Image 1 (spheres, helix red, strand yellow):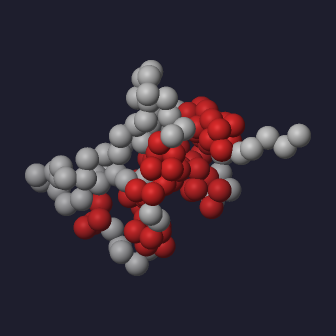
Image 2 (image 1 turned 180 degrees about the horizontal axis):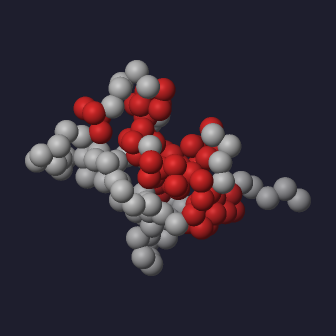
Image 3 (image 1 turned 30 degrees about the horizontal axis):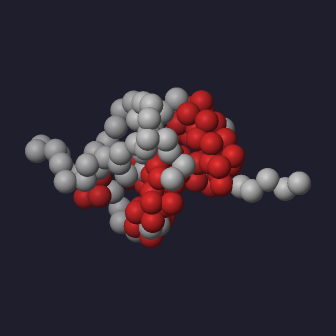
Length: 124
């Protein structure tokens, strides 16, 4: 089942969102605005089953895999780095600072395998 992205309309009463707290000239901040997330979510929706437990949001999973490649990190390292880096959280669609891991590192492996199996045609 396709996961839902965080609700962007709900903001904290006491705190500004990440967009207001972070430097808009930072490269990851700019990257978060350049990527057409809606198009990616639409493309990946067909890879999800309509049954079963809800999956993690597509934007979160894609952003974690992107950060993993950009910084040459392991699955564990990218998940730990996400907790510590508000720019990474902004890239993944978060609007407020999070203090816990968004996924288990094994979720990245499952997502990557699922995408490769369903998107890459087999060569015989």
